[in-house]
Image (cartoon, rainbow, N blue to C red; front, side, top):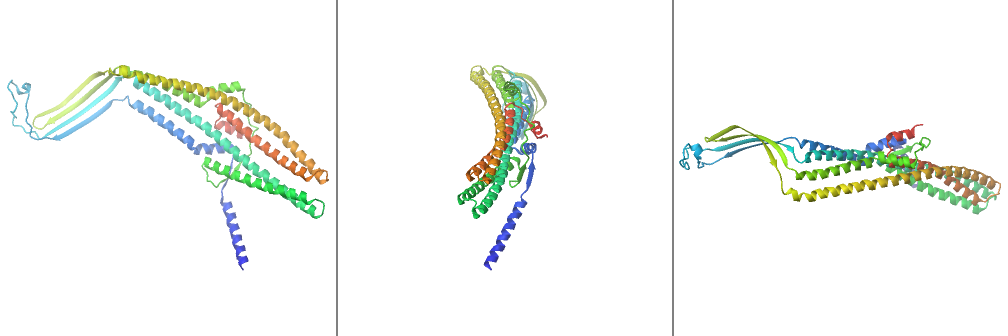
Length: 452
């Protein structure tokens, strides 16, 4: 009875497990679909977009700063019974009017003022402030494009890694089926006295090793699948089914010198640092603006009411003001020097990045050339390994080759097939890396790779 109950429980558990596996969503993905989802959900790209918006608002703030300042103020105060003294001009004679009081006891004082001030000239600091902010805004926009290219490359690498993991599982599963069939055949041959027990044990050992290799490959696939789901913003349990790697659409690339020229022209990070260099140069002009006087036009209106004493209305004023901080003539020197050093640093960073770009292009071009050559070699090796396995298998059937020779040939065949499939994926990754470092990796480029 207990055995029956345990059997029922085991069947129920198995059915539940199957239901859970079936409940997992699966999604077929091409490379360009992967890029589209990844860009839509990339947190790295969203941060860059946010910084671009921040720079845009900074420009708006600088432009609004040139608008007139308008200040409205008003006061209403309760007062006691003050002693009021009128000046001689108001009293109408030269006698001392202090203490006269005039029999007036004001109870409140009300004051209202409106003033407007608009700067006309401030050493061109306002104009240069706006220009500097515009340079930085353009740099932030270029940063978005640079980050987009980097995100695309990361997605390509993630796609390639998952593809390689899935291909490994497929090939090892096929090899495991072959190993199981071999063990079954060898077992029958050993029972009939045709094969030595030692040869059977070798076949069983290879079957066990292949099973362990499959477990490792499946684990790598699960990890790569999970990480890809995170990148794409999909449910973590979604099983991704990737299209095959297509290298037939890879275009013939230019020479390394031409790629250098394109990189120096098209790389968004180089364009961005050029904008920051111009902003840094403008900062020197802003600092030097403190040596100039400031000129502003101002105007205002005032109204005053002192209870039972005086009422003032329609008091308009307009004027031109000039201010010149003499202390800035010697204090501002350090600010100018600091701005110049900052500009020098930006220039050196620009030169450093230029050298880095040239190095990246050369290295990526060399890696891509190597990947093409490796694929050619692996294509020949795969054909050779397949033919070698066929020959050794025939010899083993006719007792002209040892079991060890057969098992070694099988391992060589599996490794050659893996190397060939990996080389195609690595060639695509190297191609996209070369496009990225030369400033040519974008969504249309990826879509062209998927065109058949």
